[in-house]
Structures are given as C-alpha cells and as structure tokens.
Amino acid sequence: MASGTAYQPGRSLVGLDIDGTIISHAGVLDPRVRDSIRAVADAGHHVVIATGRSVVATMPILDMLGISRGYAVCSNGAVTLRLDPQRKRGYKVIEKVTFDPKPALTLLRDELPDALVAVEVLGRGFLVSSPFPEGELGGKQKVVPWERLLERRATRVTLRMPDTEPDAFMAHIERIGLHEVSYAVGWTAWLDINPEGVSKGAALELMRRRLEVEPADTVAVGDQRNDIEMLQWAARGVAMGNAPDEVKAVANEVTGDVHHAGLADVLESLLD
Image (tube, rainbow, N blue to C red; front, top):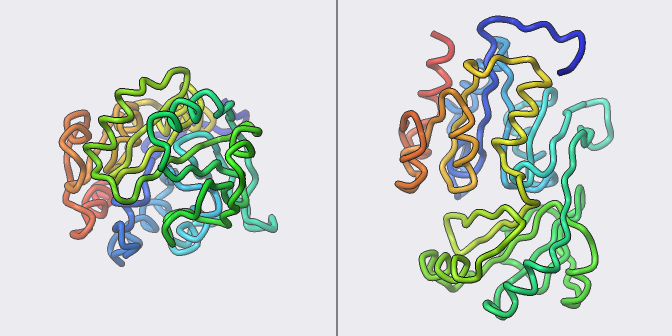
C-alpha cells in the first residue's frame, strides 16, 4: 500500500472501460456521460480509466474528459500510468508487464497467415505486418518484416482480420489453444494478446491496494470480453446494455447501452 494515504470511507475506486462504455464505437461522447464522470471525480471518488487502448490512444480520451490527474490502466492491464500534467506527455508509467510474443505469433501465423499483426511500442505506436484500417490503432504504424515483430518483448500484440466474421475468427483462436498468455477477442475479428496473468482486473486490484480503497468500495463498468475480469473483480460489476450475453452473465447488474448514456445512470447513482 502507498504510505501516507489514509482510508476515507465512502470513496470508491471506479474502473471504466472506454470504447462501448464511455464513448460509442463511432467515437461519440454523450455530454451526460462526460458530466457524470467529472461529478464523480469531483465528489472524491477515484475514477480510473481501464482500457485495451494503447497509451497514445488513451491520452486524447482523458483530455476529452478533462482528466489530467490520477491513474489510468492501458493495454488491457499491461501498463499503468500516473497522470501528471507537469510532465511533457502528461503521465509517468508506474507499472509495465511485457512478454515474448514469438511463441504465440508463430502459432497464429500458421493458422491465420493473412491476419494483420501489430506489436505495441509503448508510448509511440505499433510495429505492424501490414497497415491496419484507418483509426483502429492509436499512434504511428511502422510496417516491418515478420522477423522484426518477433524480436522484442511487448506489452500487447494485436491480431486483426477485417473481412472475417467474429464467430469464425473466435473459432480459429479457440482451435489454436494459446498458452502462457492472456487474450481476449473483441467485438470484431480482433484479438489482443497480453502477458500471462495480465488483465484490467489484476491491474485495478494493484491500484485498489495503492489507494487503500476497501474491496467493498469498488465499481467497474465495461462492455466486452476484455472487461470480464474487471467486472468479476469489482464489488459492483456493471455490464453495458450493448455487451455480449457472456459479459452480462458475469456482471452484478446491467445498465443501459452506450447510445443511451447507460454509464451515466451508474455514475449518478454514486452521487445519491
């Protein structure tokens, strides 16, 4: 635990996913959602963004929300930031977990040779096998030979097949049987691979201990498979109305969908 941080009753740790939760997948932020996030933070709760996005793709959302202090969890839990407006980039990396992507990528290439692959370069962007569709990856993309993708330890690797149906893509991934990594299939034919044991929930548990928040005072809201551990971790795990059934099944409750400011309903209840 962080020294000198006394427990304050009533202060919750609130972990929030971005895409499909705070903003729509088209990038739209409902003003009511923005205002409720600000109100919960102003009330003294610890609002921690917990996203699969890279650091460089997360910072613009924090700017949009007016969040410049506190903490953020990126890359599905592999990277934790302490936000600091005095720093050049607005943050300091305080936790980073990496892994060797070669075994997983070798298996995946044999099964899905036409898939697009991106290896995250922390704070800058991605090394990619071929360009990803515009707007899907935050930060710069640098196309490199396949061997370069296997050379460096990574916080996250992303696999994408834009022309494949999600169910067919998931069947491929399940057949491969990845080992010694954590992975989650997204709302399209998109796979994020992280170090073993890494998840948003695991990163938020470390944050809970750092902030000395009681387990009972934890809230998490998300909409996708990479949010499942986070929803299970929280005392109050809330699935968005637009979440798949398997995500809703692990949540304590289900709120409205992202297009109807479902997150705001949850956050406003913390202010009652």
